Amino acid sequence: MEDEPVNIREYEEIAKQVLPKMFFDYYNGGAGDEYTLRENMEAYRRIMLRPRILVDVSRIDMSTTLLGYKMHSPIMVAPTGMHKYAHPEGEVATARAAAACNTLMVLSFSSSRKIEDVASSCNAVRFFQLYVYQKREVSATLVRRAEEYGFKAIVLTVDTPRLGRREKDIKNKLILPQLSNLDGLVSVDVGPKGGSDLEAFASQTLDPSLCWNDIEWLRSITSLPIILKGIIAAEDAIKAVEMGVSGIVVSNHGARQLDYSPATISVLEEVVKAVSGAVPVLIDGGIRRGTDVFKALALGAKAVLVGRPILYGLAAKGEKGVKSVLKMLQSELELTMALCGTTSINEITRKHVQTEGEKLRSLL
Image 1 (cartoon, rainbow, N blue to C red):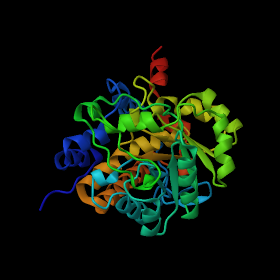
Image 2 (cartoon, helix red, strand yellow):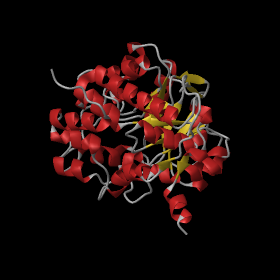
Image 3 (tube, rainbow, N blue to C red):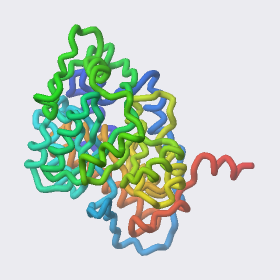
């Protein structure tokens, strides 16, 4: 009987073994030199924890709410594409696992399972991630379907006017399957093959003219709350609040867009201070441990979104693997809270962490 993985790193190794190289590289790769990809994780490691002692931690409550929806913990499933690369059940398996762990899932526009299939797979709260296409009616149709099938918010990705240079996908000549949600709307047939199908598809379909005024367009076609995903600068966070969005995700697209952009955890506090509590601030990128979740919460995040670890679990063990990954992170967060002397999410404060800058200043 094989040993069960005990951490996310071990799930990653299993995924690497079982997936074709093209698919693993698609999930795991980043843009350019992959500096930001590495930095997303390394930046967490440079933040130290400051535990408090002699606190009664016999009961730990990790629960929180987002837009009024309660979750068992502040660990959500990030929007990631093409789960069928990892497992035949694709996003349906992921959705069931998220529901079993009582957490929110954000379904990717590039899901390999239809909005309707995921919605009918289990009873749970879900958000839908949206890209804006040159043919606006494509995006509008997806929004209407998501709203009709009970999705509770639209997560608009705003950092992709063009696709980042993902050299592993180019070298592997990534094959893009027909995306189920785009059947009858957009063809993924990109013509003569020469590199990544995804890169060619994005260049032909995504709208590089997307700007702040289009938030009003999106609001005009849906009554759902709108969350902007892809903000890493305080100035953009302030503008987003002025535009009346319901939330912000501090994200560099899993380091798949602009290489040498900052690690998300390194700019989280800047964004949190900029919005001054006006809207919830979420974060993704580089989260591999419950300690990472704790650090993000201490620096002001309302919740975190986890992407690649979910895919590792799905590739390794299907729905069971996704459940295992979520429960692993939840268990690690609970232990970190106990050892830091915090019994609820609200008790996690800025005083529980020391950033690299603070460490350097303390030496002066």
